[in-house]
Length: 256
Image (tube, rainbow, N blue to C red):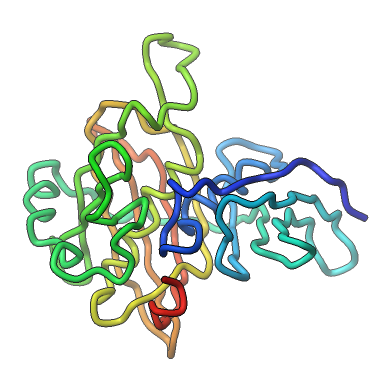
């Protein structure tokens, strides 16, 4: 059985490749719709096709049946775009990097000289200040990259119930901040990839205007797949959110 929940539209602003949605933003926005028993919850999102832009996508909840767990699906004209479910996966944070080291690493970001998707919402250098996230991960150690990130006011989606003067970004933006930093821990310049699966836990929404550090690490590769992890830290060095990813090597021309 299924229950229709709502619809979802991926605005052009939140693109990754030129013709499809940023994987992290799409996954995080869908993850927010997944029914969970506890919070924070760990949610796994599998992308089945490039998320189309500026079209109406349906969100449906499919009940558990037999050996199949309950799942929330995102569809376009009957075709599955993504599937999301709450999981018991234990996510291990990538070790923190100081803000000065992360800022210095940004100057060596490979995407500044060559980028398969230069208009990407999260890591694209072609985005104007305040439009994209401008997360530019540069190397800080073996298989590890980091970037400073200050969430822009245009991304604010909610206020803080404890401190009404504090604005925070939404789930989609939080997942987007955890997304591409994982890909750049691999040689994304020489091995272009797109997100295939992302599993994340958000402990707190990032605060607008506050410096954050996002760290990514390559774990391993198997054929076309690359496995990575990432963690987002606030200005006090506390974990805001953490994730693991599965990437798929692709021809960028197919997506651009």
